[in-house]
Image (cartoon, rainbow, N blue to C red; front, side, top):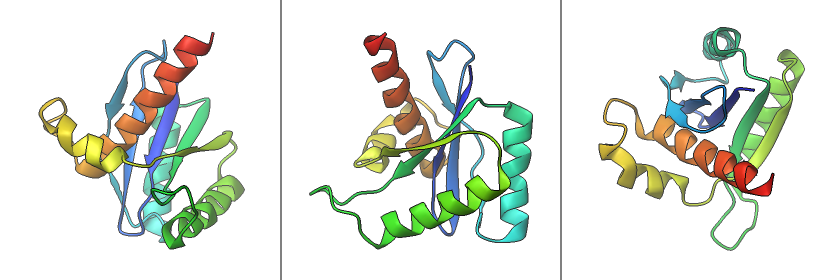
Length: 133
């Protein structure tokens, strides 16, 4: 099973993918403006290329756990993605992933902060799944 993770942003969306054994996450190239037709097409091309069985989208809650403007925008994006993509989509709390991604810059030096944030989100998801089985 391969999982694709997204760190949604209206300007740029970070993308990461797991290895087939669901052990490691690695950042991919970010996608510019997924809200526009060309951006969505670029994202769907990555989905086609990577062939995930699950798409994980980070849901940015406030530090107190509330849903703010960005969380609502992300939920709207998830709705649009569900209408165009047959792969199951799940949301996951992504609080602090950008901060952790900035710290992980030396680990993934060639990727954008957005895609590193998606990789941090995905690695946490994979680690939790591994310990729950």
